[in-house]
Length: 590
Ligand SMILES: Nc1ncnc2c1ncn2[C@@H]1O[C@H](COP(=O)(O)OP(=O)(O)OP(=O)(O)O)[C@@H](O)[C@H]1O
Ligand SMILES: [Mg+2]
Image 1 (cartoon, protein in one colour):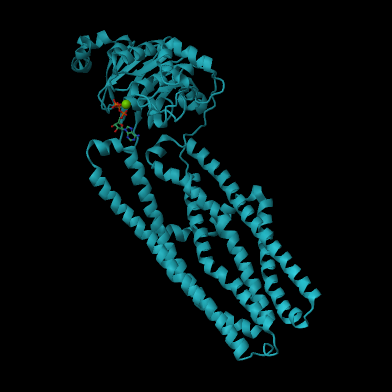
Image 2 (cartoon, rainbow, N blue to C red):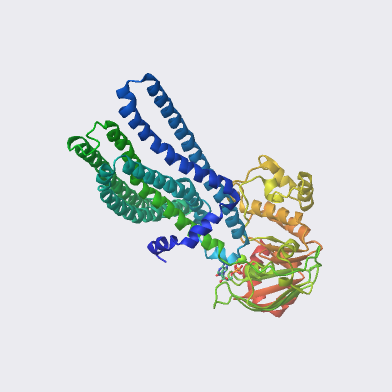
């Protein structure tokens, strides 16, 4: 769908209703804003009426009492106007912020339930924009769009009615200028709409460019890409500048045009009212002329801004449309299972499992194997063979195409998703750490896991010293993605995280990256400890791990090519023997 189509479609009534349904819990605020909007227009027309009274009656009468009364009244009106404006701004914003607070929670909850395929196919930047920038735009529907338009229209209608009431001939003369300003407004709005789409596209280009270059700065510097990246950035930046300048240009044309129409109106009122002496004005009704000046301001000022407000409203609707599209996406793993047992023994059976990440591209071609409770199996094979894929299936990150996976003889789809995942702890190939302390990264903010428990567990698997040697120990902040740690260190923390959850089934996707002998030892020791007495599947690159395994599964291109223990496989003289000789022998000799 093109951006223009998106804009066009965004203005349907159903969408509007859906956005406004979110105000339901805040109906009181909603009505405060609505009532204040009406009060604002009432106050706005009182000033011109009072001005007229002062000029036409109080001044000629030279009545001090009357003058004082009117001036005090004017003060009251002004005060009322100030209070109304203040409440209007505050409550309209409060309503907007309340709505997006709820909406954002809904969106985030929805996102957390999406299956991995969804994230494989979505850009992080886009999802972040939906949750942050688009939400802000939706809030602006309330704080700057809809209610402001309603208040402005009310003011304009009230102003026009008072004009007609005071002097209908003069009023009609003023109205004659309206088409000019209406046409100008319409043209302006259309031009701005297109310009803003361009601005947003360029802002998002700029965002993703900077975001990606910062993330990949190592590559930029490593390959001396600075000059090329600078040039690319210059081009994007220039496009961004041009897009913004276009909106500035339209603004610079439109506002003088609006200003001129307003002055033209004043000129016409003076000309017909004073020089041509339209009926009744001729009788010395100077007050009406002044009242008209005020009323015209009431009519023209909102008109000038209404184009802008409509854009805000429209942008909000576009944003809402995008957010709702995510909310309406049905991409979660069906959690229809009912089995919820406190723990599992840990028997695992794969029978003829077929799976592909993308439709029509099968990655696993009929995988069958069995792990008995308490056993350790190792999976080895070339890169891209499908080793990590196997473990992605066990905890239902992805749904298999055919075949069955059983744990303790129960189909994994029959477990409640949350309990299934509570039986399995996984140390992923690339460990992800949050920008938080080591302790919080281990407990993941689970209040039931005390600091003492963490330290005790760390001692058991032999990583306590390593952690206390970090600056700050358990309170060391590892920063975004754990950049303050080496990949070996990150993996040790992930080990501890897995160990503490005391799972029935442990899965370890060993990182291929080589680590120093000391860390290697720590990892080996921790691995031995945490696999002890529980079913473990280890995607192994370390010979020590592999040798210890009860069964080794050898994979190639999505198929299991050999199975057996180390000795058997070597005797077999097949794929494993070649792999062993090529990869591990050097290690063993060293
Ligand atoms: N999220 C994904 N979306 C689409 N295809 C994927 C995805 N993850 C992996 N693949 C593909 O699936 C195949 C198996 O990948 P997998 O990650 O299981 O390999 P691996 O055996 O773990 O390799 P390595 O030893 O390098 O970790 C590869 O061809 C890869 O391109
Ligand atoms: Mg892998």
